[in-house]
Image 1: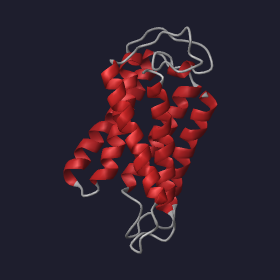
Image 2 (image 1 turned 30 degrees about the vertical axis):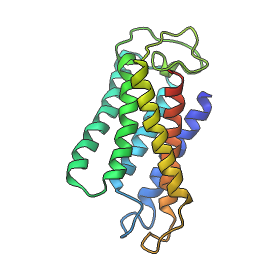
Image 3 (image 1 turned 135 degrees about the horizontal axis):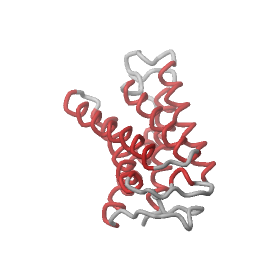
Length: 194
């Protein structure tokens, strides 16, 4: 499963990159704010790295800072921009990662195995015997429901016919696919904690 998560996160980073360099990136009616795509790319690469490379307390704190920075960025942007839905969905995903990483950043035990990069973070299959840090169940369930909501919101954007005001490139679909992959991977990780 770790390979699938890495692939999903590389899809997220690829979708964000395509959106950033696509011909309609700055066009009127573009899929969404470009800074959200930058954050999607950073999050995808960070999560893929976490799965592939064992993290200890120091790198775990660095990844915690990345996702914490994402939460703060979203809170600031929510107060000053009209694209609130995109920042709210991004804030949900960053918050889920922060919640899962807080316990890992305080763990001194490094694990080995196929998903050792996420040791102390989730109760996913393949991580048996690693030191688990479990969130309170109510927080886990609330975050899981919120992240599944992000997946459903992205899926609904995929199923809607394009409006005339949308950019003709289909980049809104690329953004939705990337968002579904990101939130789907987070939902899987959170489900392992329930």
